[in-house]
Image (cartoon, rainbow, N blue to C red; front, side, top):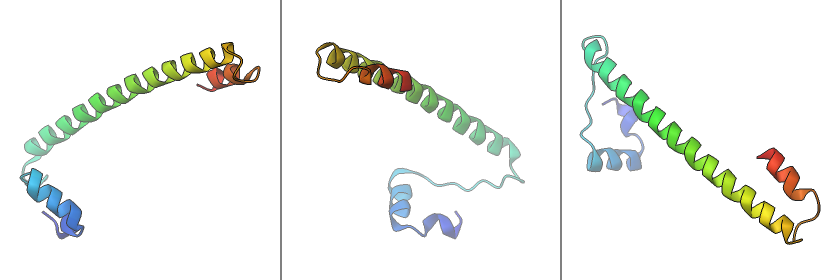
Amino acid sequence: MEVESFEDEGITKLLNDEFVSIKVDREERPNIDKVILRKVKEACEIKKEMLVKNGTFAIERLSEALSTSSDSGKLTNGVSDEALRLC
């Protein structure tokens, strides 16, 4: 791998401990590069879906909590409505 990949000792240790680093020459092996890029894109889409799902869940729970707090009189009028609007 290029020297700059190993300038940070923490990254070097992580790569050496957990991975087998392989350098692929994109010009000589475009077929391998294409597969790698497709897999990275798929992984990013899966992570994006997970983040959206978890974010939606968190917003729903916060909305419920604000609604409950507002109903109990612990929040001033309009605070929960404004918070829900912003969510």
